[in-house]
Image (cartoon, rainbow, N blue to C red):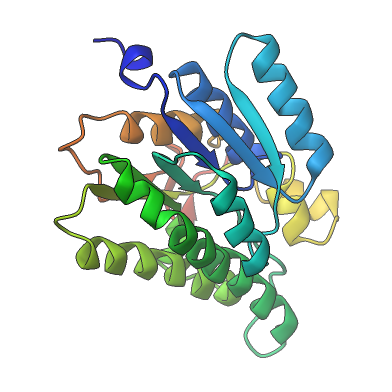
Length: 257
């Protein structure tokens, strides 16, 4: 049976689908045969992507959503006929200051999106995922959730929270027809991640990737997510860490400079 036929009439919700990994994942899940529901705060972007996918013969819909707004998340969940796959991708990093001078507001924002946002959407859609009889929850954490580095404590703390959420959920729902998959990317070069982290400073953002010939791309991570999601139902990819070949750890990167 082909992947597309196996996923016919199945719905995948992707949060943070307006750019980067989220948009790439939506495209690849659509290619795999899912009806893809795109969510993000930027309505214009997800509507454009939904139109692109529909024009290509896929099934897609856009729904503007702030994952930190629980009432909005609950209303969104109630609007769906079904949900078979949830990809918790909405997140991000803000700032690279040390603990001594980090802004608590930045830490709070990162925790709200990466952890509480993931909690909101997962809680709201879990009944539908269980009712599907074959649900999958994907949590996009990061290698930051597995090892710390200087200047990254706020983001590291948030991604540790996302990692622990996934691990604990898997324990708590074992025996129910829902898989919990954690994907932890390392260095990924997208159009927005580093630039957002450095508050729009494109020069600082570019230095993150200086000398690295081939950091991961959004498509690389989306391919990893889609592969994990489309394994046979009895196969659970608990954790998959994916890095570029040039990155041995969060603090050990080969650069041709």
